[in-house]
Length: 141
Image 1 (cartoon, helix red, strand yellow):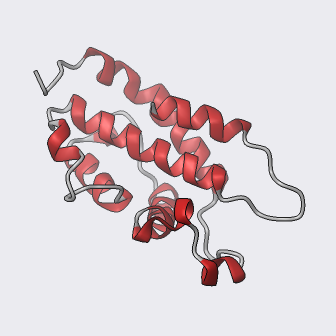
Image 2 (spheres, rainbow, N blue to C red):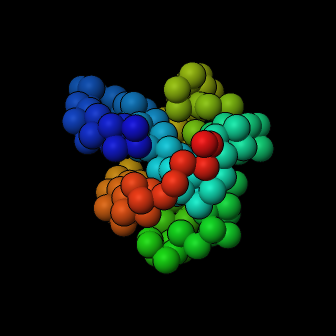
């Protein structure tokens, strides 16, 4: 599913005269699902991944992925980490990307993550973690 979110984010058309949050939401959700796929491949069960412990929190998911050696597949550069933490403010904290936030919208959503870095991170995640995720036994069996 992370791959699907990435595909639709890439194809999202920018509305005239305004910033769209749709691609940001899609890239963030793609990152979330891809990190959860990595953790699932490493043995974490779905009920743990979907619990309130992780939810949509990209920061907690990244910390857990680092514990489970995601860097053996994908380098988490300081730049990538910074953008994931920025994205987390909008994606996790009150889900401001999909429910909207009028005060933030009036300020044109300051401090949004760099969408190019999110896109690149999604693409590299898909490419690099795919073999691990595909070959892993299902931890829910």
